[in-house]
Image (tube, rainbow, N blue to C red):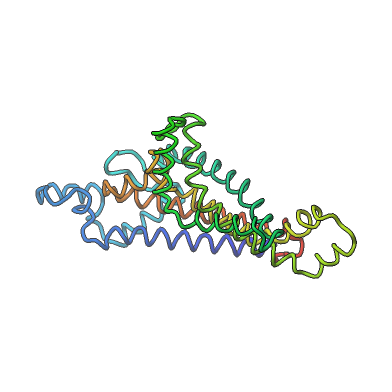
Length: 305
């Protein structure tokens, strides 16, 4: 187990280094980063002064080394537009993204797992067809369109819920629904597929022959073993959501990491773009590492040596 943990940690470090390197290299792929950030309407002297101020006049490898050296300390540089350390901006926005992710994850688990189990148990029945048709439709609907429709119906026509910003539980409902819809449909279909595979195993037939109740068979024996692929997908979903739900946060003006990312791109704030990309990768890697380590808890047959 210790060997597995060390191996996964080393892999996580390699992935983070790769993402940070790519994010840093992208700064220079479009030409002079100083000109890219401040525009070409400045004089040559002003651009040269800005380039020196940001350190872009130094050799590439020196800049790269300084950038990597600052990452373990959480030093992503300073935002060009806001003149605030990038890490301070991320820390300021992350709680809003965490709140939205928690609400969406609650809805995903609450809805997708029961629907997936029901569809598997009632395979090829009307209930199964309705549930899977609904899941397919939910996966097909663009997130931005769904968000706009929810705003139009519940915010404009019915005036039941606020449509932008945060600060109360009511502000959280529409963004959480929008963010959870696609993932709920995908997880529900995965639960159904995994449950059908498990329900065909010999030990399930043995449990039926022993006279165990359907509830015990489905929820104690089948579901636990069907959760491995579901847990993997949930880890990917959580990592992605915590990294910033850009579309949802933009539609609902939710002040999280996703909206911060879009604002950084629009403002051509390269240090901030690099920071949010690297931070998102860090969250994604940590969440999936925890998911991998939890496999042996859910399924005792799995032991990492």
